[in-house]
Image 1 (cartoon, helix red, strand yellow):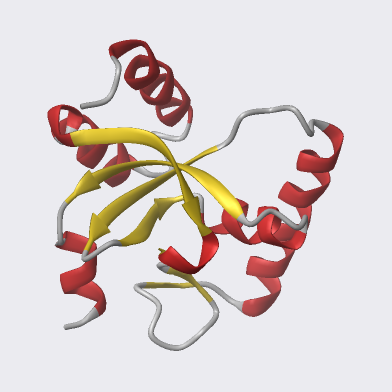
Image 2: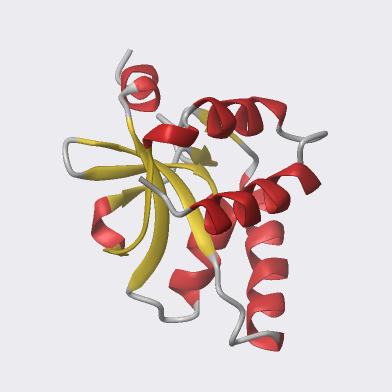
Amino acid sequence: MIEEPLYEKLIGLLEITEKDNPQLVNYFTAHKDNLEGPVLVEKNRIQRTLGPELGMLNSESKQDFKSKVDNILESIKQNPDKQIYLICEKYNDRYYLLDGNHTFEALKKNGQEKFWVVFANDSVIHKQLNS
């Protein structure tokens, strides 16, 4: 189970975007007792769920996706010591991104190989991706 101070910190960060992503905040709050982490995860075990590629759960134009990734990459370079957590759902030893798809790509562009992940053990996203 996740430590309470980290949970409160993450909920605080998510509430900033609640207007844009109320489903994630509701999911995160509902799974509070099932959350684990943060853990370091290698990039090949993390699966994006948003992007311009076919088969993504949530689609976004290539131009919009690239623009957001580039903006986040610039912010990362300006604040290299900032701790960043990706929010995932874990299923069959893979981590499906719920929040942080653009950030994940920006961090990879910046050369990062491992990522701090907070996750719930569930299969909601996996089922949606494979339906």
